[in-house]
Length: 279
Length: 144
Image (cartoon, rainbow over all chains, first blue to last red; front, side, top):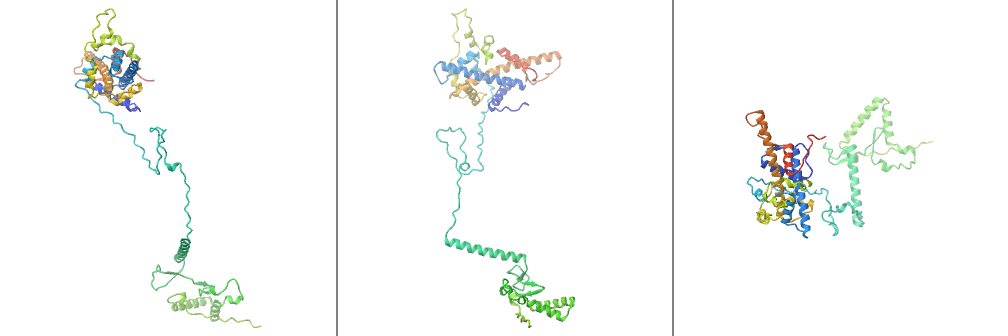
């Protein structure tokens, strides 16, 4: 049958029963129109029998129908009652299996949270269920802040530690580092290099601690060491290339001296005595 | 169903018991006893373990649409049996028509061996059969 499946499952059940009856009679196939016609007639017959039987039943002041009501309706409709028994006992009758009642799969709520309220007494059971409690209940929650002195103190301390650690590691990973040990593995205990390179010269790292930047007493005080080196270079040779060479040599010598290259282990450099201008 | 209600007088040729309600009034004295039938209540007992072709739930549903609610399955089976019998009768009449038609066809074409062994229920045969039962079916051969 090319027509779309009717939405009424019972009707299609009836149609199946009717077609099995036709097959029983001897038919091999049937026109869909003809089959529909017969099905329609069968349904109509059943409904009319029911209506008529109910009318007879109520006429007799009863509520429950009895077989006599059915018989009367059949008689009224002209359906012979006598042949029924023989028909029922026919040998080649076909029995269809009862249509299985497929329970519509209850949509398991995937996002099920919370419990649903039961139906109150005045609501029928066949009505839809109450929605999940989370859909209409809103409880604003705040986590109570911890005001314990001990825990707050601990939290502050651990945060400070974490910040320092993170910051130092960041600078160590991204900036110049010194190795504490002679091995090449720079991942162990990296020390952030605190060399200050000013005009090619290495200044002691504690320089900033000693020199106040906010108060400059005398301009000459600010620059003592690099001037000395530079001037010594200039004294030797004014050639740039030689300067560079000397510088390089100086660096190399320095490098040799500082085989560990640890700023804390450098040789002491004494400050140059400041010459006060004599007028 | 208004089809059969008004026209059942002429078509009852099936069972003998149907005659008793249609006795011509001219013989008032000789009304036959409702011959037969051990009352249908006996039959009901047999129905208890009988499963008709039309499932009980289907019958119950259609009866419920008419307002007949019953908890007794025998009533349901009685009704479904009646419907089944009706359908079988109509179908067998239509089959007879079909066979006659095929027999005529083979005779006219003088072909040896049955043309079609398959019996197809067509609307024409069905309308003829239903006409004998008092239902007039007129379907257009095509739908507009």
